[in-house]
Picture (cartoon, rainbow, N blue to C red):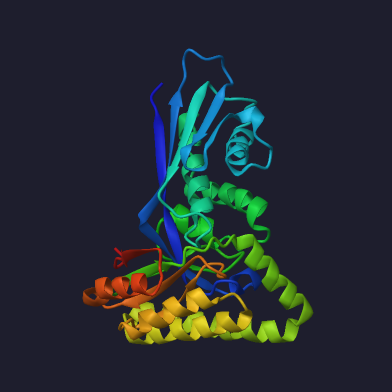
Length: 316
């Protein structure tokens, strides 16, 4: 039996984070410069049912039964086995590697789950269709993100820009002009579940105020879709600025994010905003292609621990 592998990209939310949890639309794109990869290698000399899981980046090496039932890697494997009505698997080694920063808003958890589910189902001879991969990855997301919208697992699975509305079929977004994005990492770990939980508390205590903010985000997302599909990048950039201001009012920005956003704008970005859960993690800027490197340098000078320049290509 050969080895099986699968990879999945990182992701960035262009518009609509947090409001998407409350039934509003959002736009997300894959970030292919960073990837998670799962490799399943058979262990023919080991007893059937042995599944050795290795994730060097987090110092993990353990057999499947030794991990808690809700451990994300164990859960992904068990979901595949359950879906196939299997009590166990042929002896194998599962090795997970990733270049996606953890707790940074780039979809690390979703990418690992998607890569693992795709590779493991293929190893078992039943490669899952994309919709099922996304559904199972969402089940994993729910275990450690609380009440996720489903946008991360969707954009990572389909590896295409998407217009996402919770509970509705995925809409692949048509890109008419390439989008050059400069991503700046604050270096501050920001688990999504904490930010999502804090916003929920705010919404529960001040529902009218938060619903108003979410509706304003919704209007921006709809305008942004039209701007992206028509190739009007200047309008798109201005809408990113407006979305960031709303996220500040929602309470998920921080001094470090605001500083990087302002630095990108001062360096000539068409627009900039935080991306993902906030309270740290990453921001992103929309740039003319010939300004991307200079904006990247300014972000580093302003305190970014790393930058990624990514281009979202036109739809084919």
